[in-house]
Amino acid sequence: MVVELQQRLEREIQERETESALYNAKLYETEQKESDWYVGLSVFASNASQVMAVAFVGCRAGVPNFQGLLRLHLCGQLSPLRTRVIILSIT
Image (cartoon, rainbow, N blue to C red; front, side):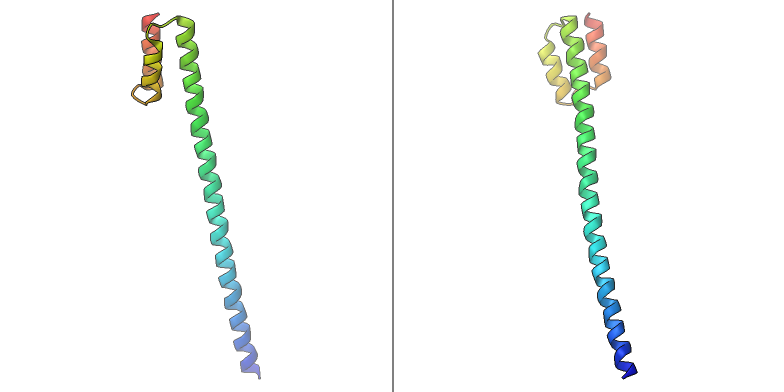
């Protein structure tokens, strides 16, 4: 009888460990998704603020062909610093 109780206890322990591992895997996956979402939102906000800054400077300065310059900036062909240098050199 004692051996049977020990076997049942070991099975119960294994089941709990399996449930715990599954729960931890789901928790990790959820945290990873939330982290990816936050990073994506942060990158988007950073890019949006850069575009707004470039647009504000370009509009205020009356830069010729500003739409083309902004399009190059948005496509990633110009860095924010390079865009500002071009705008400042034109004005």
